[in-house]
Length: 103
Image (cartoon, rainbow, N blue to C red; front, side, top):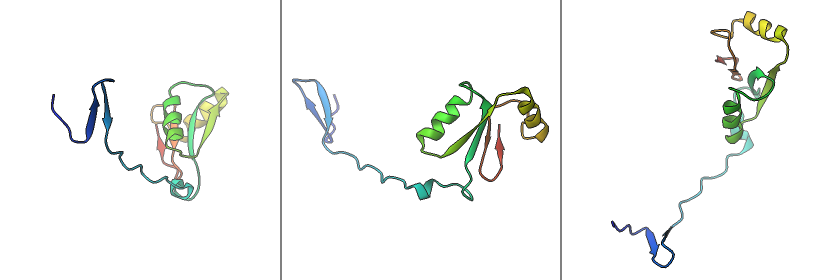
């Protein structure tokens, strides 16, 4: 076994422990989380879970403030398709604060 000077091996327990703790990065303030001109990122998808859930998890885990725009009626989807924001008329749609659509 290769010995690492930064690790201790406790032979009774069979556990490897780090001698030094790595520095924890400083917490990001709410001011640093603001994107663009203060508008929120908008996630557009059908009401409920699905393909947009991983986007919501990623944004929530990063502490980004975002808004859900739920598609609850067929008219909402047809209106969205008419805007030209959907490349292949499919959702989820992630809209950045500057209005850039990501499909």
